[in-house]
Image 1 (tube, rainbow, N blue to C red):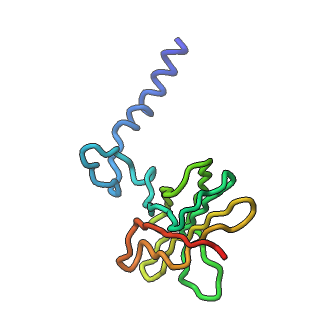
Image 2 (cartoon, rainbow, N blue to C red; image 1 turned 135 degrees about the vertical axis):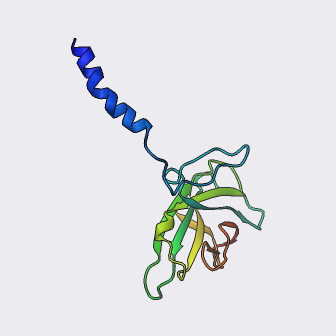
Length: 151
């Protein structure tokens, strides 16, 4: 009898969940072969690769750090939107990365860049010496970064 009462009380709650209207902010249907995602589960992202030109293998202790940042304000530290740390464990360049951000935090007039550096054994080995602007001002959301040897 208790089971019947619990079922009778929970049935309206279960049915209410089935009749909810879809969100108006849902993304368009995925193309064939692409996984379907929801707007809440898949924030916008910046993707790319990191490489360098000289032919020198990275040490086993190498660590790659990539940062998406808002560099709009002068004389103020950049605001970090996302960062990723890659531990190559013997692998060599190129390294692929993906950085995620909340589109509601993006201001059309601001400048956003991607910065990368490679360290190893407590020393800076490689860094980007040019800006890689992304997202706003007709800049891409994919960058091919070429780092230079640190001096």
